[in-house]
Length: 356
Image 1 (cartoon, one colour):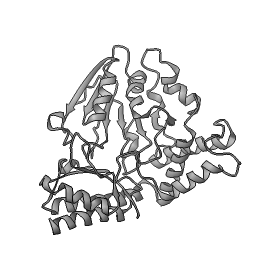
Image 2 (tube, rainbow, N blue to C red):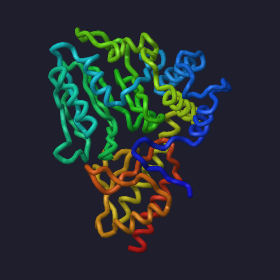
Image 3 (cartoon, rainbow, N blue to C red):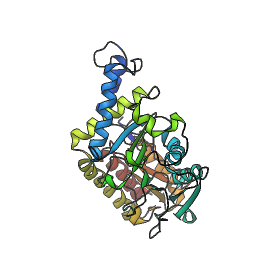
Image 4 (cartoon, one colour):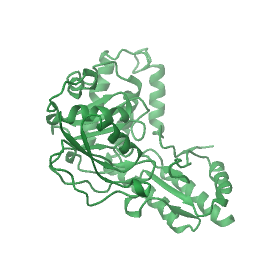
């Protein structure tokens, strides 16, 4: 039976990417070596690194605009630490928007480096919306936000206009929708949502914002060191980076971000339409802040849970259970999830309405 993968991450990837990656595990580019054993200094992998860094900038519309793309290790959680190390000045301050679990994790790390201002927070409402009309302190070294909140199903639809450098955690919606990415001075994203397997993190940084903190930064945490070493200061996670390249090639061949955005909007419209129509379900996120990547919803009556769980599991759906912070269900509709899979879920919701 075909599986419909709604896992929040590690997530679904395109079938052609799985096929090409699995072939590379056996024989990478006819070298007679596996991608798992090839030297990261070999000309074959250096070419992969050069292409994936350039392609990331191309898809984001940032080539030739003073940005560098890095593929590093440690996940987005490492960037919670690396960002204040590289951007917060000695005796400086930073502003953070608190919209969920990962944003609060970033705030915690920043507090170890200096004054950390929470400009606004939706925590009192269990993060069910994105705060609006907040003011960013003009003397902040940077402003940090999280574009999409997987656990709570919210997504920023607009970003602030400010003279302060803007940093954004885009781990769960990178490459999913058209944005003027030049509004950001630093973007970071764990690969395991829309880009590849867990193990690498994409950082896109405007080089001009670096080297102004007045502090000594350990080399492994220094973005400039990684730029100077072309993302190979230490041994990179070769397989994760190669699979990310395959995914970005797939996206480019589809027509890029603008093309996948139309597909993502259609998937979200189909599922949210059913959540709003079906009297047995209700969404958890404020309507205007609903994520097109992660739809969170509840049953109106928990007595239907056993029957609904049976229906969606029998339909071949996987990974639908909600996070414990919200409960209910979470449908993660990342780039590679086809519209067909969303229809299968909607059909299961309709069947519950029919028989309950």
